[in-house]
Amino acid sequence: MSLNILIVDDSAMMRAMIKRVTALCDIPIDHIYEAANGAEAITVLENHDVQAMFTDINMPVMTGTELLRTINSDERWKNLLRVIISTDGSEARREEVAELNVRLYVEKPFRPEVMRDVLSTLSEKDPAA
Amino acid sequence: MCSQPSRRKTPQPSEHAEAIKKALVDVAQESFFSYAEFCTPERFHEALESVRDAVDAASPRWLAAHVEFDGAFAGRVTVVVPYSLAADMTPAVAGLMPGDPIDDVLVRDATGEFANMICGTWLTRACVRRRFDLAPPAVLAVPAMPAAGRDDELVLINDWPVTLAVAFDAA
Image 1 (cartoon, each protein chain N blue to C red):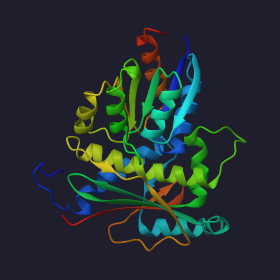
Image 2: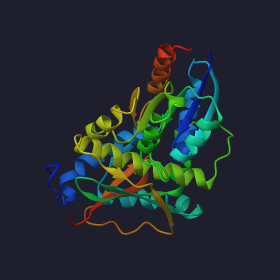
Image 3: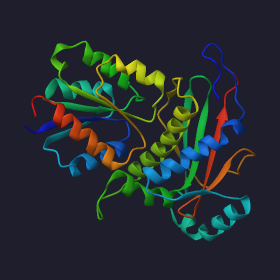
Image 4: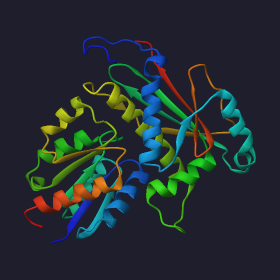
C-alpha cells in the first residue's frame, strides 16, 4: 500500500527539499500534501487520508507542538505516523513532544539519506503498508 | 554555557563565537552543499572586491536574514549574504532540477532558513537541556553590506563574503 504524506513547514524551500528527497526514496508514495502551518495541516488531515506527517515545530499561526496536541485529542488521527523535523533538537523539546506520540525526531540540517532511512522505518512499521 | 533554569543572564557574544561559527560551517556543508571558511578582515575585503561586479549586477544586491530567539537568554542571529550567492545555493538545497524555475520568494525563503538552521543548531548544541523558541526568519533586501560590528564574524562561503552576527538582549 502506498503512503500519503503531509509535510508541514512554514518554509517553502524546506517543503520542496523534503518533498524532493522523499520522492527519490525507494518507498511507494501515492501523494505528498503540503501545509505552511499547523492550522493548514489540520485542514489537509480533515479532507484527505494521510498515513505519515512530517512537521516543523516553530511555525506561525499554529506551531508544531500545538498541531500535535490537536491531533492527539482526536480519535480520527490516532494511527497517523508523526515525525518532527526541526532545528531544535534540545532535550527539553524532545521531552515535550515525546508525550505526543511522535515516532521519530529528525534534526535539521540533515543529509538526504537520513530522510530515506526515516521513510524506510515508517514503511516497515506501518501495519497498513 | 547556559545559565540554570531559574536564572536568566545576558551572555557575551565571545562566549558563543566558536559554537555559532561551527554551526554555520555545518549547516553550509550539510544542507546547502557549500564550503564555508572564516577569514581575516583583509581576506574578506579582498573577496568583497573580487565579487563586486557580480554583487552590483544583482538586484537586490544583499539579503539580511534575522532570526530572533528566546529561552535561557534572548537575542537575534543575523546573516548577510550576497543575493547572487543565495540564488546559487537555493536550487541545491531545495532539490530543484536544472531548468526548474527559481523565483525571488524561494531565494529569500532559503536565506531565512539558512539563518534559522544556524540559530537552531547553535542553540541546541550550546544549551541541549534548554528549550528556545525561534521566531520565523525575517529577510530584508539591503543595498550594501552593513559595516561589520566588532563582534561580527567574517566568512567566505564558496568564496563569497558573508557576515554572521549574534546579539543578546539585556536580561
